[in-house]
Structures are given as C-alpha cells and as structure tokens.
Image (cartoon, rainbow over all chains, first blue to last red; front, side):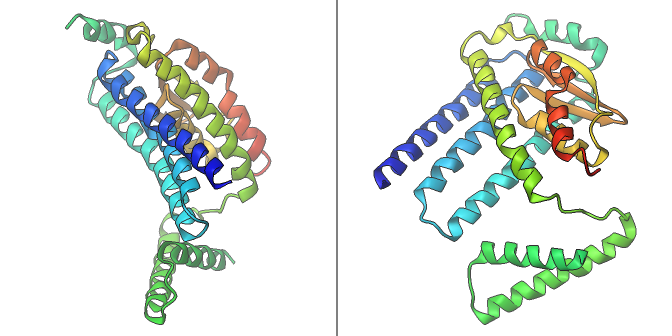
Length: 112
Length: 158
C-alpha cells in the first residue's frame, strides 16, 4: 500500500516537474509577450497541482495535509490574478490593442 | 449569523495553520480572530457588499471539472511548446458574459486565466477581453463551455 502511494506520488511529482519545465521552455520559445504568458500559466496551474498532489501523498495524515491544500488554494487564486495583472498592464501600456494584433505579431515574429 | 459563520471559519483556519494548542498561542488566535471580525464589520459599512460563503457543494462540483479542463488545455499548450511554437495563432476577442451571474464573473475570468492557453485581460461591463494562444480556444469560449458550466452549477442562486 505504502509502495503504491510512493509510486503514484513519484509519477505525479515527475509529471509536475515536466510541465514546469515545459512552461519554462515555452517562455523562451514562444514568439511574443502574450504567448509567453500562456506558457508561464502552464507552470502556474498544472505543475502546481501535480507537485502538491504528489506531496500530499507523501505526508502522513494530519495538519500538513491542510497546509498543503491551503497552499494549493492560494496559488490557484493568486497566480491567475498575477497573470491577469501582467496582461492588463501590458495592454494598457499599449503593447497590444485589438486593431494592432496583426501588425504587432508580425513585428515580433521577425527573425532574430 | 453572518458573523458567527466568519468566527467559526476563521478559527478553524487559524487552528489548521498553527496546530498549537498552548493557552498563550490560543489566546493570540482568539485575539486575531476578534480583530479580523471587528475590521470586517467596520468595512461592511463602507462597501455594503456582504461576502457570501459559496456553498461547498457547488464548489466541490466545480473544482474537479475545472481540474480536468486545466489538464487537457495544459497538454495542448505543452504540445505546442515542444512541437512548433511558431505555429501559434494568437488571437484576441471580446466575449459576452451576460449569461454568467454577476457574482460569478470573477470566478469565470479567473477560470479562463487558470486554464493555460487562454488569458482574460479585461473585464468591462458585459464583456471580458480574452487573449488566446490558438483561435480554436476562442471559438470554444464563445460557445460558452465554461459559462454554461458555471450557470449550471450556480445559476439557481444569483
């Protein structure tokens, strides 16, 4: 039983780390600001869920479970808020408006 | 009644965070709960928007569905990242949120941001501005798959 829990938790942790890494790679590989925020949100959401899910299976039943769940809850509320604040301020700062979408993308897509 | 609910949930929250049952620390806990209640009641007079507790049942029905959405859209974004990141079709659109009860619009916008590949940028009046990594995500949002889920679950009590 304990071995099974360890295996499941290991799988969750490894996939979580994989998604976290994918997010980081995406931040470098994607072409412009807004698409990079999407990549970062992979790390924000699924990686956090999987890693904390894996940690939940590692702890003994008790107060630590509650604390981990609190961390998960707060991260799931605050990280979209942070992405939203970033995107909103970028837009209001003039990085992207509805009509500029086409032009802006092409500019950013020019070869490095 | 409202205050009682807050006292109970704050006390439980404090206990779960601290885990100590020594008299001194419990005293601090009681003091901090009392302080928060006083502040809450004072703020109540200013903004007049009672913070309702969502019923747990509804949240519990919503969260697993949202987790499933997060997982599937994460896989899509990950595929894009490792595959061909230049083939993204970033797009921006305004999505009507009239169907969503007003108290749930924050949840709606937050759910959009939380699912990778879509990002809510602005919530003005009846419209939320969404930026998406792929055009298809915008189309799905316009069909309102998150909105119908939220109205399904919370629609009965605005």
